[in-house]
Image (cartoon, one colour):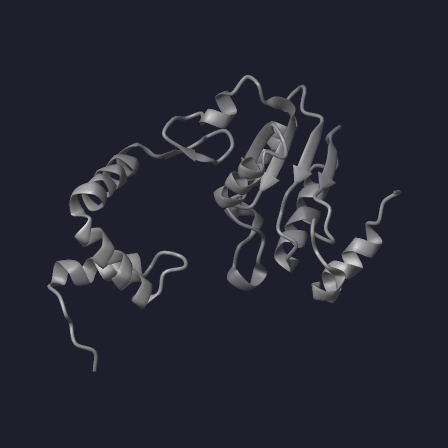
Length: 201
């Protein structure tokens, strides 16, 4: 049976860190020890930053992004193309697209995907607001940037049907061979998608 090697406060810190994605019990112990050793330069500023974030973070009522203001920074940005809405499953997907700098459009966060097995139905997602936004004058394209999973594709089909009555173009991300990818290392599903979605050279 494992022994506790520190007081309850430190054990609680380790347990909470272990709940973070990518951190198991061992990594959480190392992270906790590092924070404790660097208390003045890391633990105290991190604690303050987390307290302030907890007090100020809100969900954008327009797109579903998280920020410290409502509407969020992206929704308020006048340089963004308001004619395109990029639909993503989660805020992490929005951040990934922003890091890539692939498009300068507005976003819409669904807050998940349809999943009958997990009990996620249309009313659990931010779909009503999506229809409202897609109906606004000037919106011409909805890009479905959803994961290439069964649930992601089911959600994409559902949204396509939901928006069918609107005069907007609904597109999806291309799937296939990644830049720098070697065919020998790709799975059959990715190769099939790449063949089906081939383009002129």
